[in-house]
Length: 209
Image 1 (spheres, rainbow, N blue to C red):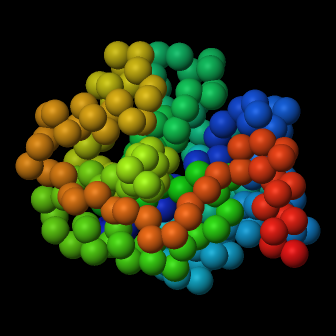
Image 2: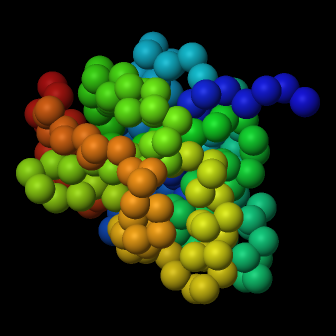
C-alpha cells in the first residue's frame, strides 16, 4: 500500500446549500466557471499533495475533475440513509481514505485561497505532537478552516456516534482530551469569507470585475 502523504486537503462540498435555494454550491458559476474548478486551480498551484472532495450529489461531475470523491454515505454512522450529515463526516471520510497523515479543510463556498494558507498549516504540523490546528479571524473561530491529524480519527468517530455534529464543539472536545497536542492557532492575515447567499455571490462577482 502506498505510504500516506504528510498532508492532504479535503474540500467540503457536501452541504445542502439551503441558503442558496438548495443548489450544489460547488457548481455555481463564479466569473464564468464553477467555483469548484476555480478552487482546484488555486490549490493545484500551491499544493502537490492529495486533494479529496467531500460531496453528496453530482458525484460523476466531481469525479471528472480528477480528485477522489467521498460521500457521507461512505462513513457508517448508523444513519447511512441520511447523506447530509455535516462537514465532520466529510472530514472523517477523507481520513478513512488513508491518503494523508494530516488534513486541511476548505469549504467550497470560500472562493479565495490566501497564498499563505498552506504554508501556515504545514509549519504548524512540522511538530508531530500537533494534532489540531484551529484558525481565527478577528477573534472569531473559523471552524471549517482547520487542520487535523488522523490520530484523532477514533475520537472523531466516537463524537459522531454520540449524535453530535458541530465542528466547533468537536474542537473544544479535542482540547479537553488532548491538551498537549494542540498547535498555536492561526490568525488570518487577510479576509477569508464564504459565499452563503445569492447576495454574497452577486456582491463578490461585482467586486471582482
